[in-house]
Length: 218
Image (tube, rainbow, N blue to C red; front, side, top):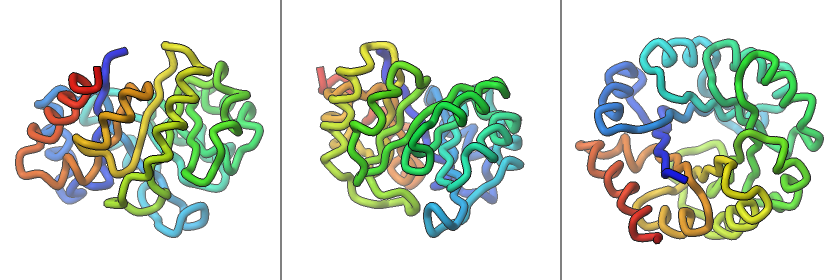
């Protein structure tokens, strides 16, 4: 599968968000990652559906909305209606994810599951053939700039073995040119990068480095 890069706008300059989106679009990114935090599932508060709608006006690329919230059944459809192409929610708050998946899909978006570092990948595998997307967290969610947790690599490998070649498997947290290589080798085809991309003066440099990691992983 082709590697896809998903810049996390949480690390962008929100005072110039349209420009920040346009800047990385110049380098061919395929997706944008939007982190939604409710102050309960994780300590921080971030964005709501109005920001999703605003980003939707700036790009036709895939918008994946990562819900770090305790009630994805209630809010997942709202973020789908706001313009998300993929709505991702945590297995930790939805041990039976099917009702949430159905609600999201009813609004026209794809449904993805997210698994946190302390959570066994086995909790996701019973649903691996039913989901549209899997996000493996390689940091504990809630804060940007954390160090990559290597255990995520084996989770990706196990998920890819169970899912086969067609499922989008994404890794989020501490991704850079070095940590991307084992993730890609294990079977990840989507990489989220926030500070690695938006912290660079020339955003094309880290984006190229991530694509180069795919070459080195072969």
